[in-house]
Image (tube, rainbow, N blue to C red; front, top):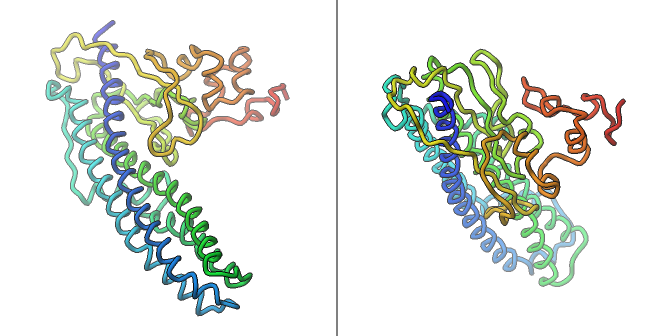
Length: 371
């Protein structure tokens, strides 16, 4: 293995190790957000129980009642809004600062590479990263409001209107209807809040990475896309793992979507350009996992198989058993086309956009027959 090969492995392994560390910060932030939601859920349940008797006597629905209940829901959720916004904001800023330090350390080889420039940013510069994320345009306040409104608030208001229009009899019957609606709404809000948290933290990570890399592009000849080798990696991202882009070549945006874990690793011109005297670095391999299928939730899914590889996603996927291949995001038709050699890996996606091609774009129908 040449020193350049070893440097490439070093940059890849350190970047992946930092992503592992970042997931711990991510998990702590998600846990804090869920704790605040659970507190809000208990508060709303107690308020609904207290007011169920009065709601059971409603015989019609008036605009004034709708406005009053809308304001009531906003008041009840105000604490959760503030807590979630504060938690995600604090975690995102912390992730940005920690990521800057991590990528400075990675690129300087912990201070050994004299030619590498370290990067520092102001709080205002970091804050600007979060105005346009993989969720879309709009700051953190907007997305937290959207999560609460789309989930718990709308579920409760819809149930209140139903109670008023249809009548549900006793106060206990009304309470059960409203609490059930609240629980369903909180489940939706919980999923959206987790997505917001993870997306904002990954946005902080990728922007910190880009800032450090941009300041040192004179040392690079391009960038390599790196995705996580596990069966949670989506169809949108898995095809591009290992793809190399020249410095002046347009690259797909990362994160590519909410909860995206993709990242860029620089392709160095030569280890000598870094100003280091290190001739050999420890060769490392990429870790991979196969988890049980189902929603990832907040605590992850059980690991069913794992190992290490020096391959990109395409080579790793090809090495899996048929059972493990079936647990990845590659569906049965594409799987058959790949395994029979009818289509090659790079024929499955568009490098410029980073997006997978449809079967029709590849010249096949939905059953995998040639058009």
